[in-house]
Length: 235
Image (cartoon, rainbow, N blue to C red):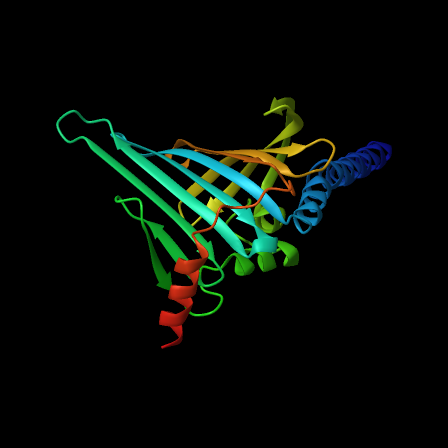
């Protein structure tokens, strides 16, 4: 009888230890993961300008570099892309540059002229990306922090420096589709909580973020071209 009592007491103590451990893990995870990412999400809501640079291996024989310069106060952004083929039997070199002002896309042509393309209001416009940032939803310009908070497994990493900014790495594991797990490494600023680097295992993608809310302006196509595109878009 006494032995059963001791055994029962031992089981209850073991359960209590497990529950305390689970509670401690929950509190630690909330403090070291979700809470830091929530701060990042709130900080991103204040972003009004940013530069983004991305490099990726499109295929074993193709490397690409892309950049975005977003200025919300101009309702404008610049997008540039450069792809190089490394296969000597099938070399390739593609360059693309676009400047979006409002709902007009100005495409830089090989003869150094700009060709305007009109889109419905809000489509591919900087204001759409800026509104998503302000609302804390996925802007496609900065990392989708909200989804990482909801569905990601967050693991605290080491401190490092990216372009002179001190940040802390976080390893993020996300389920993508039914059969694939995505592994990201995100570096959040120690002082401002903003993302400064993200590395994704998909296509060996590395993205660097800089010049948050810096007072830079984009060099837009000439006013005569903007006026001509506005006139043609109203017809």
